[in-house]
Structures are given as C-alpha cells and as structure tokens.
Length: 145
Ligand SMILES: [Zn+2]
Image 1: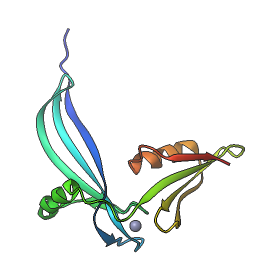
Image 2 (image 1 turned 90 degrees about the vertical axis):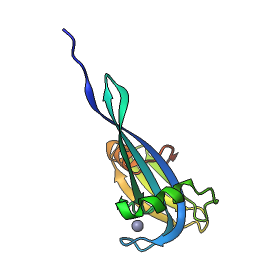
Image 3 (image 1 turned 60 degrees about the vertical axis):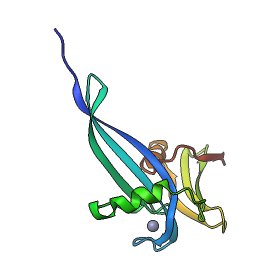
Image 4 (image 1 turned 90 degrees about the horizontal axis):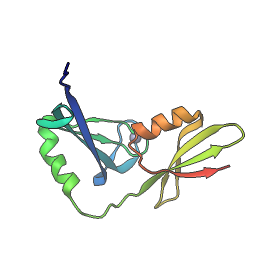
C-alpha cells in the first residue's frame, strides 16, 4: 500500500531591526521593528511544489506586540526588509537561569542605552523555551545565577 503525503509547509525568515523606528501601540516604546516573512508551500511527499504566497508580520522588539502586514502595506514592507541601511536601534535578548530554583528570567536589553525590559520572571524551562520560539530568537545569551 502506498500513501501519498500532501500538506502545507511554511518557511520563515526573520528580519530586523528594520525600517524607521515606530511607536508601539501597546508598550509605547519607539524602536525599529522585527519583521517575519512566512512562505507557504503546498508539498507532495515533502517536496515543496506549489507556492501559496508570502505573508509578512511585524513586531515590537520589546513587548512583541504585532500582527500581519495587510495587503496595502506589503509592497512597502518588502522594501523595508531588503533595505541594507544599518540598524539604528539595537536590542538583544538575555536570559538568567536560576539554577537552584530551576527558573528562568528573560529580558530584552537596549544595547544603546543599557535599558533592560523584563519579559519573563521566574518562568519554567518550557515557558522560557516557548517564549524564545514565539519571539523567533535564534540565540539568547544565557547566564547562570
Ligand atoms: Zn511594544
């Protein structure tokens, strides 16, 4: 018996900080945004065959408030993510592992001003991992405390 596997696979690419600094409607910080492009493909037997379009999302790098870029703004965003102008805002995630308590704190640091924004406090390992994934962090500087 043969079964043919069909499905939709998505590939994501993360850009940023990009574009003009914008005030976040949620936390009101002014930073260049993080952009994410999701390419969807219909696949047959895990071989991507049919392009199903690209969606762009934009996020505040501090609180990660954001949403999908609508049709009218897609063109402008395509330009923003391709723009090679060096970033003017520079934020990075940092994690503190409380070994004894087995908990994690996650913060975002503004590397220009040194300001620290808490993201998670006393989180479990799975919560920390989940947040890392949700924020598209590839690498987080981790410290043991
Ligand atoms: Zn925000």
